[in-house]
Image (cartoon, rainbow, N blue to C red):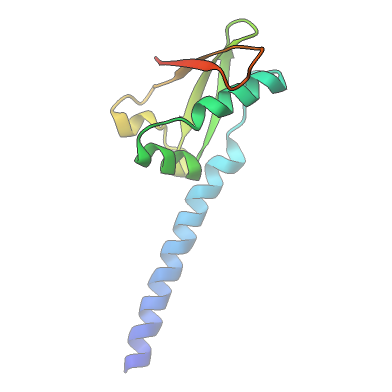
Length: 117
């Protein structure tokens, strides 16, 4: 009797684990940059992404992926973010089409400024 309860619990936990694993795999495998960028600009945008201040957004981005959708010159980029199951990060903020504009100092890739659009 007890064995059946644990087996059911184990099956439920396994189902949840598989469901979340699929949700994490979808953005990791399907989100790519839409424009080619230099390695230096990519490092700069990755540095900007690491500085989100909301812990829920940080966790969501760790489980999801970002992509560069537009460049405006050699030092500016627009970034979109996707979370688990490829849900846009802006949904958490109530802005489904949210993008982050990043301006990079090309001398120092860690020197950047960002603005939400």
